[in-house]
Length: 282
Image 1: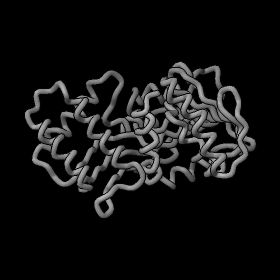
Image 2 (image 1 turned 60 degrees about the vertical axis):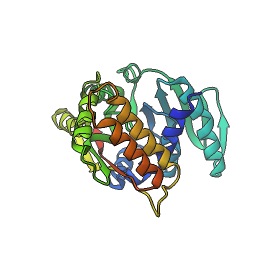
Image 3 (image 1 turned 120 degrees about the vertical axis):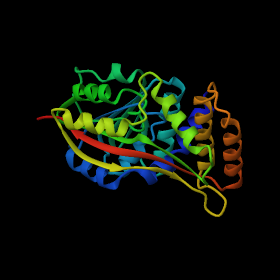
Image 4 (image 1 turned 90 degrees about the vertical axis):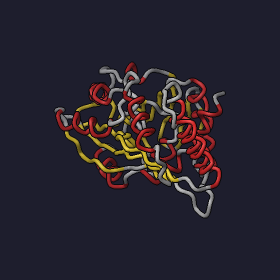
């Protein structure tokens, strides 16, 4: 099992919860039926399921799809255990479980292959995913899988600002090179949030709501809440990995100092992101 990836995805849950826009969520809940058909692409460990149940979406169907088989297997087991622990009645099924009147399944597959015009979903979710693929293509494929007046919900979409504190002289160079490295990767977009908003504005449907959903990770009295020190360590690892083949002379010293600050409980991190909500034409 890919323990590092699973731990990272689970560690960021508390960061996500603080970041998610309540205003966009409330608009979403007003636009979906009582028992919606929900599809989530790039579902990861399935953390969206208990969140939906907590929001009152406890009827209908949910299907989560991710390319990583071990992550999908973890989602089936872990989310059922979590809901049981919270006091919900849960019955296991071959691909997931049923809790109350909500049928939950998880599958291994490709996001774009799953977003088929043959489907008719009320809600398509792509959480912290639109910046990993072409946002314009994701929106187009989501539209094809939604029923008329269906809703696409794309929370935690990165939009081109990465901040570490305290200041370091190499920050402008490192951060700029990191964003350039993201943009040089096929399908990636370091300004996906604004580009997705533009695509929604230009499309035939309606951009219903948009709000900031920044990740903010900061220490409290020298320690980080939950497993957020691990999460922040992985973020530093992503930067180091993305720039590992660069010729930046500042990189090694920058990474070393940032890791020391993390270990000392002195490092603050912010990633600027948007939650976006879109409704298809009737």
